[in-house]
Amino acid sequence: MKTLLKIALSLMALAGAVALAQTPLATYQGADRLDKLVAAAKKEGTLTLYTTIAEKDLPTLIKPFEMKYGIKVNIWRAGTEKVLQRTLAEAAAKRYEVDAVHFGSPEMEALSREKVLQPVISPVYRDLQPGSVPPHREWAATLLSVWVQAYNTNLIKKEDLPRTYQDLLDPKWKGKLGIEAKNQDWFASVIEIAGGGDKGLKFFQDLVARNGISPRKGHTLLTNMVVSGEVPMALTVYNYMPEQAKKKGAPVDWFALEPAVARSNAIGVARHAPHPAAALLFHEYMLTDAQQHMVKLDYVPTNTKVASPLKGVKILITDPIRSLDEAEKWTKLFDDTVVNRGGR
Image (cartoon, one colour):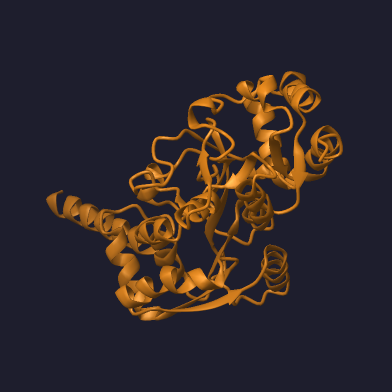
């Protein structure tokens, strides 16, 4: 009887060991997860990344990974549409060349729907901003592009700044407000903040009717117009733009109406990655060590344990599914409500 029990226990232990060996690293949750990732990734020695990250920023983000792990990152960089098209075309042709992809979350969601990405379970997910990881876990947000409000410090006093979105309805802002003409994601999110549906839309209708909003094409142009005083206050510029101008001595500063609205970029691992362990290790790196480097580049990190230029500011991440599925609807509504009625 004891012999049979020993055999049974041995078989159970063996079965457990086999199951552990067969557990994909992407979903492995053991305490030695990172050690296993590093060991397997170093054996592969390389990975291929498709990304939209600015070329000037790539060395700051990629070199530390290569130096730490001795793994070469081969990069193909292009605009959002080209990265999306190439990744989808290669998957359809069963030509599996890419290991990891990094670009906008709506486009990540498009890749997910086409079964290009694989689910990943990582302990670092618990440290990320709410909304950074979708339920299917096939991508995770790494950085945020946060829309903030910028103002000309010669024309507007800090103590006079609005404290809420509703404060923008004050008549003192008549003729002083500008907006970027393609920011329908921000528009949709603020409608949600203002009560949603007809109530949220009425906020913008009232704002345009009472005070007007001058639409401008390009966040850099809008920031420059705030600096020149042509647009005393901009409603939608990325936080790093006025900050960089301010550091150069320009009469501009910024603040954030809360919740500040942000769109995210994300990292995903290809389902048929030729170098799956290296891709998973890079995925982990982008959510941990790389977050500090992103701050140096004036990006807003998603990891809440990393010091952020918007520390303490409540942030609402735009819904990537809405951006993907309802782009036409919100573009038309934004144009009809703001762009075509805002005036110049």
